[in-house]
Image (tube, rainbow, N blue to C red; front, side, top):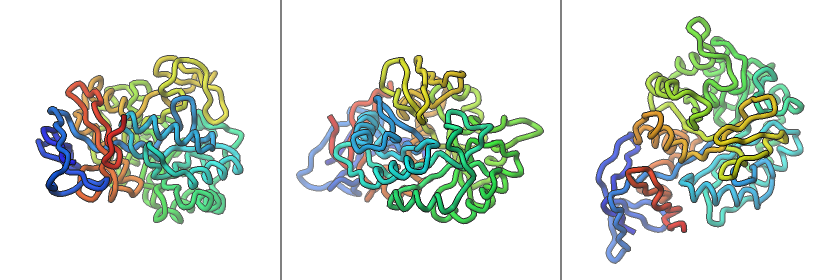
Length: 372
C-alpha cells in the first residue's frame, strides 16, 4: 500500500508532507510496483497511539479477567485509534491478580489493539494516597509476590506502580529496575524519598499531581523530584477533569514533550452512558467526564486516549505534534516497545491513523489492514 497526500508525523515531533509505504503489515522504506495507492486527502497521518495506563471501556474491565473482556477492550481501543495497549490492574487480592495475569498471558488478538504489556497498579501503594484503590488489599512491597505475578503473566508485566516510602520499596526498585519500568505512584513521599527512588531506578511518575503530595515552592515532592531526574517520564491525564489546563501547559513547558506521557486512566464507563460502574470492586458514579467514588474521590476517567489528545490540542492549546509525541512515541519508549511501535518508520508495525483538520478520525490501519 502507498498512501499519498498526507501530513506525516515524524517521531522527533513535527509533520511533513511525505508518502507512506506499507508492506506485509509493516511500514516500508520505498514503493513497490502494482501496490494499492490511497489518497490521504490532506489528512494528518500519525502512528497508532499506545495507552499504558487505563483499566477498561465499554462496560468491561481488564480486571474482569476474561478473554472476552480483553477482546472487547482491544476492539474498542483500536477503533478509537489506540492500537497498542498496556492495561492496568487495580489493588486486589493475590489470587485475583494471578488470574488476571494468566488471562493476559493467554490472550491472542483477533481484530483489535495489540496487548503489549500489563501494568500493575498496586498493591504496593500508600494507604493515605490510595485514591480509588481498595484499601483492603494494599500491602508492603514484596519481591516474591511480584515474581509470582510476572510468572503468571508470562513476562508480560512491563510497568509497576509503587510508593517508595513503604518498607522494602527502594530495595525492590533497585532489584527490578533493569527488568521492568517502575513508576512512583499513590504516594506520600517527600522530595528526598522520591529523588532516591529515581536514583535507585524508578523511571516514571504515575498520573502526575494525582494521588501524591502537592507541588509546593518549599516542598516540591514527587513532581519536583521527577523534574530533577532527567531519565524520568511523567504521566498526565488530559481529560479536562484531572488536571487544570494551565497546569498541563506549565508541565509541558517544565518537562518538555519528550518526557510527558499522555494516559487516559479510562474505566469501564468509557464509551458508555452515565450511571454506576465498578472499579477495583468499588462502585463508581459516572456523570459526563467525571468518575467518582461515593465520597467524591476521582476514580479514573471516562475518556479514551485519542479524546485526551483532542482535549489537549483543542481545549488546552498543546500542539498536535507534541500531543502525538506524548501519546504515541513516549509511551512506547517507556515500556520498551519502541522498536516495533510508536512511530512511522520502516520495519515497525503499520499501525496508522488518518485524521482531518478537525481531528476527526477518518481511518485506522492495524498492521496495515483497514479497520471498518
